[in-house]
Length: 313
Length: 241
Image (cartoon, each protein chain N blue to C red):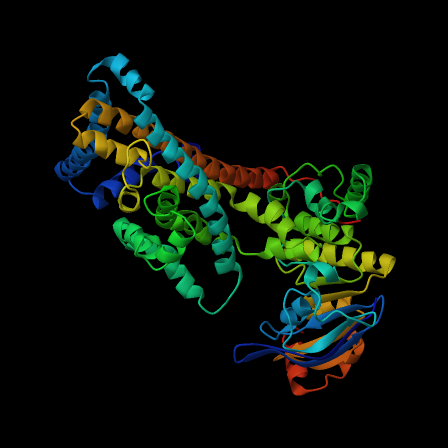
C-alpha cells in the first residue's frame, strides 16, 4: 500500500498529508481518553471474563479439571449440545440457501413478509421462541392431544430442544447469503441456464462456489448460536441432568448446586468451542478478502503485461 | 434454423416492454435489433432465449413451438454484454461447462471435451490461455471466451445482447470484423441487439428497428438507411451521422 501511495505523492508531500490528518483530528488528550475508554471497556467486559472462566475452571488444579470430563452428566450435556448442533446447522443451511435463493431470484407476493419473518427470531426474546413451542406441542398445547395419542414426545425431550434451537438460529445462514446473492446478481446463472444446465447443476456448479465463504460464515454463526443458546432451550428442556441438559443448561445446574469449579469447567469447554468458532470465522473472512484481492491483483498484472492480441487476424 | 415470432407481447407491471411483435428470421441470417435504450430490444432477445417469458404470443424454432420451453431446453447460445463468465472457473472450464452438464449417457468423453475446447480456443485465437481465470483476461478476450462457451454446445441459434457494448472502440471494431467473418463461415442463424447503428448496418444482413416495444421497420441496411419508414427512424438514424 505504501509504495502505491508513493507513486502519487512525491517526497515532501507527506508532511502536508500529516498536517491534514492533524487538522481534522481531535486534540491529543481527547484521542488518548477515547482510546483509553475503549481499552478499559475491552479488558473489563471481554478479556477479563474470559480469563476468569479459565481461572475458575483450573481453580482446583488441572487434574480436577480433567476429572470433570469423566463425569457422566457433563459428558452427556456435551453430547446433547453436539447432537443439537449437528441437526440444526444442516437444517438451517438447507433452509438458508432455499430462502436466500427464493428471495433474491424471484419476485413473488409475500416476499417482503418472508424477509421480515426470517428476522423474527432476532427481534423476539428466545424465551418467547421456546414458549411458542410449548404452546404448540406441549401437553396442553395445540397439537398436544394428538401427539399424546400417538405417544410422541416433543416438549421436555430432544425434539423440543432441536426445534427451539432451530427457531433461534433461523436467520443466520439466510441473512449472510441474501446481501451477497443480491450483490452478485444472476447473470452467471442465466448463462449456465442457456448452456443447458439444470437447476441443480446451476446450484452446485455456479451458485454454491460463488457464495461459499459467505455460506461458511453463516454456518459458523449458526453453529455458535446453536451451541450457546440458553433461553429458548431452557423453556422446552425439562432440565434433567444427564438427559435433556445442553451445555449451557448444565452450567446453570452445576452453578446452582454450588459446584463452581465444575460449572467453570463446562463454561471453559464451551468458551473454547466459541474461540475455535471465532478463529474459523476470522479465517473465512480472511479467505474471502484474499480471494477478492487475488482477483484484483491478477487484473492489474494482466493489464500491465498484456498478452499479444491476435484479434486482428 | 429459422425463428418465427408471432404476436409477442410482454409487460412489466403497466409498462409494455414488447408490444405485438411479429418477425421471421430465415436460416443463416444475421439480424440486428437496433433501437434506443429502453426500447424493448433486449427484452425481446431474452424472451427468444427463454430467460423471460412472454405474456402472449408464440416463438417457433424451425417450426417447433418453443414458447413454453425453458432456456435450458431451448439451448439458444446467448452472449451477454457483461460476458457473465464463471469467475471461479478457468477459461477451459468455462468453455467446457455446457459439455459437462449434459446427462452422463449423452456426454462426450473427457478426451472429446478437451479436444472440443482446445479447438474452440483456437477459433477464438486464445490458445494457450486455457488455465487462466477470467479476471486475468482483457475485456475483448473475455467476450471471445463467452462466444466460445456459447458455441461449445453447438447451439442452433446465437443470441447476442450488446456483445461489444462494454469494449473500447478499437477492440469493438476488431471483434465486429471477427464476428462477421465467423458468421460468413458458419452461417449460424444469429440475432444481436445493439444501439450502435454503425455496428448494426455493418454486421447484419437485415436490421429490425425497435422503439417503444414495437417494430418500426424491418429491412436490409441500405433500404432502412435510404428509406426510413417513419420520422422516428429518420431522426434516430440522423443522430449519429
